[in-house]
Length: 286
Image (tube, rainbow, N blue to C red; front, side):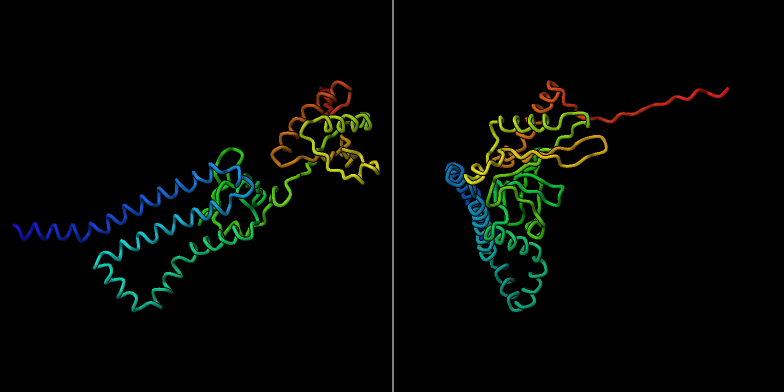
């Protein structure tokens, strides 16, 4: 009986060490992760322009803690250590197998490193991917780029995929944005009056951004460029080039201008065309 108990105690001691190492590793990873990211959130005022590398570095260090901890746990088990030693005898075959098995994972990690180094986009940048996916970059992990769309949903894209995509980045280098504001008026409406209303409403908006240089002002360049763009089937199409400090402000300003210009058009007799149909009813043949 005593021999049986001693064997049980021996097994517990044998496998207790790796369990303790695993528990310590999980605790260290969790504590580091929370401490690291809470530290930079408290100092976000200094990092708000480009927190990308700090986020990626945090994910990388957390992964290293887990890799080292689990490796120590495996080595601490004699049977697994002997197995690892025997596997090293066929190191070339093992390396080849690992290469094939982890090719996609390594590709995502390498692509993530290249994204952080060359910065085609950063955390907090506004992206359009594949012309259908758009949102704000929320995080760049070792494997994925996380984009929060404007419905507050997350788009998860592997780093190796997004690094090969053609992207539209609204915030790269220069955040200023020129939004095309298009409005159609009927052929009976006064074009000059419509252009005057659009120009005034754009200039009066508090978020409008004047991009003219001193030379442009001296040369009499108008503050807001408003031109007739085309002649449609039932409308004269007018475009204004509206500048804003960034894409988010531009979207809100565009919504405000649609409302204010529509109200001005209604008050001053500028008609926005809509489809007309003529219905002819023939007399039935008796």
